[in-house]
Image (tube, rainbow, N blue to C red):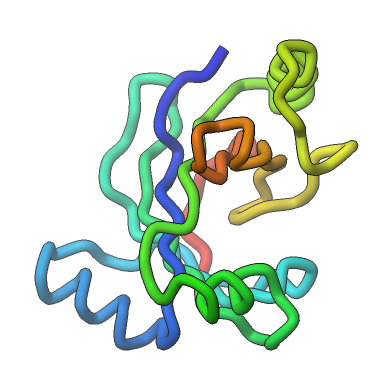
Length: 146
């Protein structure tokens, strides 16, 4: 079962400049930063609020660290903006199997490591009305790491 909007992923050319915009404009502060080498991105998670299921909702700002990354290719084609939406679930394995059974293409055979130790997979945007959709199971303990 999907329990919340975990995050909205926003692709950007300059992470520091984009973080500063969200801080100065909306008062959002960085909760976590990391580089995900597998996905070729540097990211900042800006916590928006906590949720009833013990998780939280975030804005995830994504800056490519190499030109061959999916986010770099997306930026070259589309420019900055909303890249994907992620829904939280207690069990990404079961949820992705259930959704796959409904005819939606799941992009990873097995979930991968995501932000803050989470487990993730993506659903094909052509099967989700043009929206790249991520499924996320948060790590057990949610704590800030910079």
